[in-house]
Length: 131
Image (cartoon, rainbow, N blue to C red):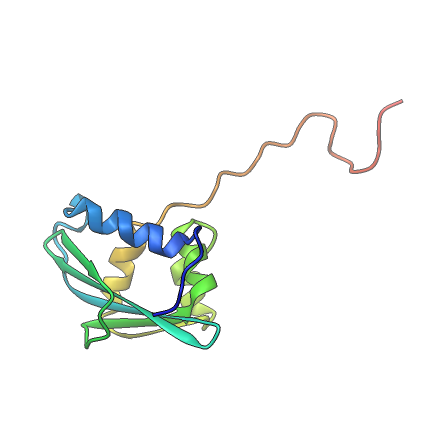
């Protein structure tokens, strides 16, 4: 395992997920998912066991129904709502082997993107003021 900075969105996400114990959005989901995150040449493993919404998170490196391989920075973007997991998969930024449905189920727990900020009136043309 690698060392983690104080602000680690992925560790925070999995810590909160594990603390929930039960996730109603996954009540019909069962399976195991291993997430392998590469960072500075090291690989961190997250292992999620889902049994009809009951969640258990560990750091095991074991066989799973599905495995996801990605750069840690990319996964940090997913768990903070800045990156869409399916878009990253379609752009070949991560690899999934096994049951893709488990990744789709997990994605439902990621936050959505930040709402767009409204454009202020009178700011439509950058650099031009009104006289």
